[in-house]
Image (cartoon, rainbow, N blue to C red; front, side, top):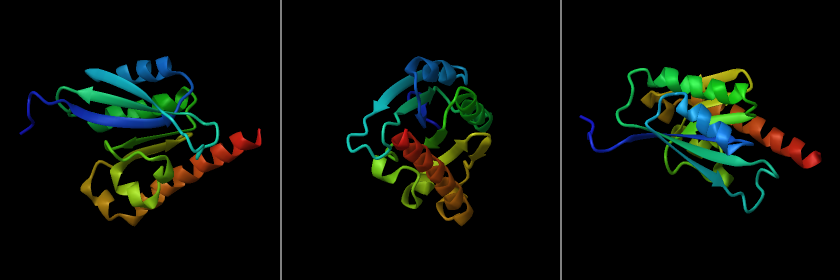
Length: 150
């Protein structure tokens, strides 16, 4: 049974240009509270790309959580996201963005019109899921390399 005094949190990490847009999109999926954080890339792992974390809090997890998360990722892409992903709290580190060692802490990824969500426990051992996360990493690294070239 969920503790009624504790909110349930999901995180979206994403290259994002405008904080206001991220907040508006997150609210559109019905979260009870939204917090955003600029993730400072001091070592320029991603070149000049910018990453925002968007925390979505729900008083109780909605029955249609997968649909809401899918909608959030789709909206991010429609608004111009290069790459967006869902990860558990504590899963973010610039040196380990979408790497094999954190793939079991990622439960959704999207690149352009390609989107995958995995809320099941099998992501802990699923090599297909690891490949999915690594595909998103490749796209993110390519975008960073393109950005460095311009």
